[in-house]
Length: 249
Image (tube, rainbow, N blue to C red; front, side, top):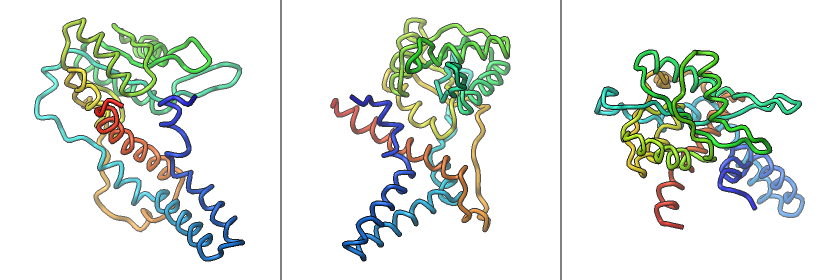
């Protein structure tokens, strides 16, 4: 049975779902020409727009949290959330681009404010290796930065927050710096708040700004499509957390 994690990263929640939708439209056009072609054209048009920097930049900027009113001086730990992984073949697994960015930002944050670090991320499917282990290894071996706690059971952002909060409360900590991409911050901060932990964004995570429109923003590209996919994932995710989880279902 599909898990919450499987559904969250399925094609159904990605703009790529518009490709099979367009194919279905073309297929039914043989019998219902106008309906089928209209459906296919709309699907392809939306896919094109989703692949433009104009749309991806707008969506990702809307997800970035406001600067917290209180300063980082109040926090007592740094929490790094699990990200993506890459399968290198022959059973080799490594941190993906998003995860490596988080490790780098966490290292910068630690150099600026050397607080104890908690890494969060459960086991990778088919292995006994957790993403938390990979994050800890990268910090300790590459940056010579110690990791105090490892949360190794979570599979979602909500579980990251829930299980990490248990560790933090046991250590008497109620306010932390969270390290993740800016577009992921709203969901992460909200999730931690549900378990009595106030989280503020790491100051070294870059803010994305695209204030000036350029003609090139209308040209579709793969990077923009990936960015839009992340944005849609977060938009759906934060609404799911707020309305579905809070309803108790």
